[in-house]
Length: 383
Image (cartoon, rainbow, N blue to C red):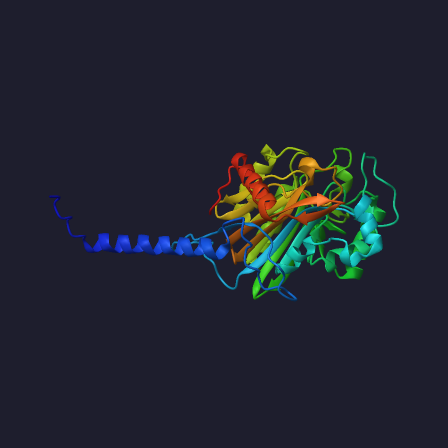
């Protein structure tokens, strides 16, 4: 006959209770957040009305903050949507000409559901200027900004290797169009102070700052395109100290700091060395979220030192011939101050230039593929 177990000490009993409580919380979080990508995640409160939820991968942070933890959740939760590269060439240009309000198609539902939406605007907003000496140059009429606003996009970075495709004239037109449309753009400006400056907004009492910069510049254009004191241009991540100073300044007056970068190597779905070298510096300077695009394919995302990093959001509103460059989606992050408390990936496939959100088995496969990209990033699935 087995011997009866020894009675538990008071400290052991407290440990068991804490373990069971944590297990219950983890179970509830998984149910509430829709961890099963085959089920629709619960719809968040929209800026206008509730929309149909889209199949998504969901990871909820259940970390227990320690004393002095600077990423302890604070304030009301704010959900932010991130999309990759946007231009208005080809079929997208035809959609824009037909009706700016419907240019983004069904993915606009996902963007509008978020409290804030951010994309990379990879085009000059101009009908003038001289094309830069390069293989591809993109430009769009001011109606492109109407399309962004109608789709629920709140701010766009123009710091990329196409923002100045039509030279100083194109840049002046882009800035004038943004002011006229009252649509905020970051990463470009009339001088370095404006280009590196964060755009700030307050949502549900949370002060949010968004900074844009590029780590991709054609070598023959880098000097001409980089903003300086007294010179218009874009924020360059190669001006590292200036970028980090901008992050520190934003940190001093914001609850949440976001850095959206144009970076990586085209068609490479793992981050390159200069991406991985910059991220810890941005986090140390105060960034809570570091995201970006450029590679035209998806890269992985996850947590590093408590911050959320996504190395490549891929194409978004963009022409594509199919295959890997057509794999797209929306990254949804929920933040409470410095803490990212929920992360979700809403998969899509580009058709006719627009990302069509996936459902059912197709979404499950796309989410599994997206998760696998984390393997070469050095990032974690949880904080």
